[in-house]
Amino acid sequence: MDETLDEPPTSAVFLDNCHFSQVIFNNVEKFYVPGGDVTCYYTLTQHITPRRKDWVGIFRVGWKTTREYYTFMWAPFPSDLSGDSVMQQQIQFRAYYLPKDDEYYQFCYVDEEGVVRGASVPFQFRAETEDDILVVTTQGEVEEIEQQNKDLLKENKELKESCLCLQKQNLGLQEELRLAQEKMKELEGEVCFLQTGNLELRRAQELQAGEMSSAQMNLASIREQNIKLGKENQELQKGLESLRNSCEKLELEGNFLKEENKRLTEQNGCRERELQQFKEHNQEVSSEKEQLESRLKTTLDHMDQLQSQVLNREKEMENLVRMDHDKTEQLEHLKEENRQLRVTLTEQKEQEVKLEQCLEDLKHQNHNLAKELEEKNHLFQILQRKKDEIEEKNLRLKQENNELLIRLSESPDYSAQVAVPSAQVPTRSPESADLLFGNPYYQSLETYGVTVPSVKKCPLCREVFSDDIGPRQYEDHVRSHILDCPYCDETFEDKQVYDDHVYCHSLE
Image (cartoon, rainbow, N blue to C red; front, side):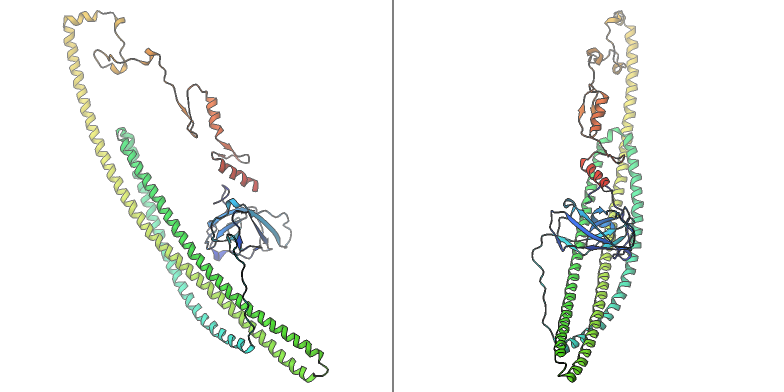
């Protein structure tokens, strides 16, 4: 997902330790059209000191740590660092590296220590279909508003009680999470112990393979089985990714609930607008009273008193609405934390079950490898016995051959054959040195003047060269595949990886 080879500085710091108000993102759209570049505008406040390794990343909504970024760009270093004034910055993300799905994402500003210093509102990568509709309710009477205030006060008390219950449940869930993490660490230690045992068994198997050249076919079949096991491991990892996707869908549902909460806050805003209209109406009445001040002084005094009472009630009502809004936000925040803790607990339990299954599979594999080693040792002993038997038979044949030579030397026909000139006797090959009359089918390569050509193969493109090519030409061919970075000493074989690396240098 990253557009460069270099990784940005990240950390395992959770959301509670981040400061989201030091960098403010401006002009963030609700939707960005796919296939086009996206420009991110943000403001650096006086509470942050920018550094050269700061970066801006796009995160999927629901992220836990800064390691879960989708893509990133290095933040441009400001030219003017004098003073406490805010600094406007912008950065452009290329369309090739942007997400292709319609999930919710957000911009995050991360410093060189991997800590989040600012986050934007969520947005999507899809075409905007229709405009938002603002619903405005009609103006209500003052008495109805006072009755609503009383109802809100009752609801506020109930919300406080439910908030205390949720806090207690939250503490219990955190304790369960801590116990689950300790158990997970113990399981990881057992897995490491079994993996070391598995490595030792494989080393012993490789030593046996070096001694048994005739058993290489069986070792090849074992390697194929190991490749199959690796493929099965990849399939399990794909299953894990599908589970993560389902968790992300659940997080999207939580975001939908947040949007409903925003809609309710907008309704409260509509009520405040109605109060504002009521204020404007009172101001119009007061202007009419000023025109008739000469005739209705007593009436004006009475109206002024009524107006002051209305303003006091409006202020009291605004304070009550503001307090109720704060309590509802706090309750929603606690509910969200409780839900996240439950989700993490379920994930921990699923990981424990998977780790136990992996432990059982590793034990079964170790048992099978031990059986295969025993079989290989037994086969090696059988081959050793056969080799000893063949050596004994060879000794017997040599003794019989010596006896036949002694008998032939005593016969008169053999002495006549020995008188043949040595020039007519064919030269024996080293392979037929133990035979009495030599190998009649043996012809050395020097007799025919045949030379075996040596083979040179390119390790990158697998092209084969004959012995006629010089070492200088062979080295030039291999070096043509290697790309050197003009900024540093690194070399690359892949053209795409080379281009991304050079682009990363150009951003510094």
